[in-house]
Image: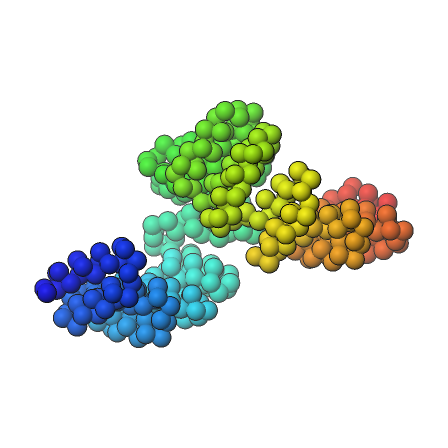
Length: 363
């Protein structure tokens, strides 16, 4: 079999998810000197979970000058908890934006990430302005800097920047301004699957045009936008369409959409199905959701399970939810422990409560 035939057959097997057979053929093609075959062999081994073998093959491919091996080796390092090695690998290749992203997302070294984001921006790397803006927007104190970067990216025609600017306007409570940015971004070209659809739907909903919002939510689901089922479910629940909402929530659970257990639990609690709600909210907590703690606390409080309620209120406060401070204060007062509320005032101040809010809490 010729090398070209080997590669063609290996590609077909990979598309059919027969990864072991594909790996064997890519390995043979690599032995025969086919460019890129070693990287594809390493990729298959990576997907098969054969990490040591994948690393060895990908390092060899990189040494042979196969450029795509660099990213697969980095992905392998990130997947196996070796983010710093992945970032250093990208630094050595002088790939600023990829290095910045790994330092930020996989390592959590924001100082080093920012240095590499700045290099990427200075070099004019594609997408760097928007990505640096997204990085800065995670810090509330630097949102103005982030917005300026998004605006610069938008001027260069970056559709993601328009979406991010729209999201910022939504956060400010200005759906009209948000819609203007989002529509401009969606007009730039094929935006199939863009989360801008969900943001624009939210803006239309806030402006009172529920039919336009519904059409956009439907389009987002059809286009396969991430988390579209759960987001549409929340809209349908607000419209009183309980059965349709539940069907979307269940699809969201099946597809492991972000926040599915939390929002479904919230929905169940609102529909007097509290026992079911507790199960989903607990699963949300196990999945890393800190938003579920307050909802669980309120449920346990309503059941008279004060100790469990307190534990969840404390978890929620530790996670940065100001609303939980006030809810916990109310619980303490109901339990005749109002003298303990004063200890919550510094927590409320830390979480951004204003002077009037602090006075009301201490009251």
